[in-house]
Image (cartoon, rainbow, N blue to C red; front, side, top):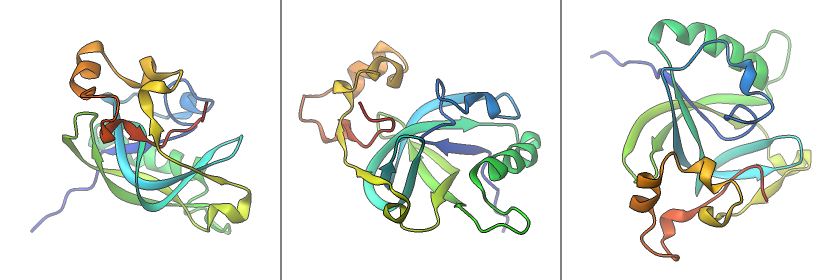
Length: 167
């Protein structure tokens, strides 16, 4: 029985498109998809953190060729402070189940979880809110057809997601 390793990363903060570390990806992805996972999101001015939880956290799945993954893992582990010689981990690389905005499974991706309670480092919890009320909602929804499919009503619980940066 063989298990295949993920060929994607779920990112929820500074590595997303349009954020300050987007340019640090070492390889060009095959695709980038707006997605969500179940976790608890924390934020502060400079970057976010997640831990295990039950909130929908909005982010992106960056998918790569299997041959690109060793370089991507090496670079992102360095950026996130994971598995570095003679250093304590700031984040740990885990796997998560990802879903698109229509709740279709996208598979398992790598993702970085904060090692300690983020509140000890000055983070505050970001509670889920209505994604479409966020000023950047056009960037969040990849095209108008997706938006129409997702929007069932103003109270649709699928639209309640935690998002960094907060507005």
